[in-house]
Image (cartoon, rainbow, N blue to C red):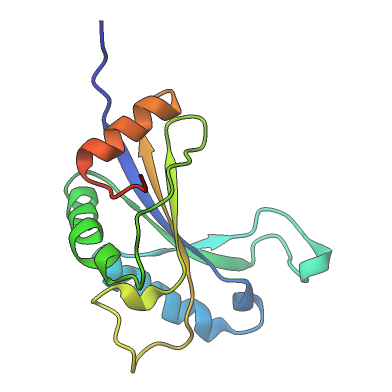
Length: 154
């Protein structure tokens, strides 16, 4: 018997190493992620000390949003039909999953989103978009993501 797999959530994450020295970078990131996703962004804090990065436990190191249900599908629709086609020389996204049926897409510049104005950006930063599915294997997860319309490389 085949099981129907579903999308559980999409996590949009922006790690900001400069947030340790410059708090304004964190504020701009919060505003940008909120504008991009339509949902209020959260601040991610470090969980342990890392002396090489002058990082202490509890310091802000990034921003993230977890999208579920309607917000998830609205963001996915915008990503597939508006954002990805705006990438220069776009030939599809890689098809490597994490081994558990989840996929992470790396975006190098936040300016490909229509909500971000070039005049208002503080600094060009990338982000990760993770698609979490109920699939247990990469093959099942890839089939689910393909069915949704994500443009994978051939």
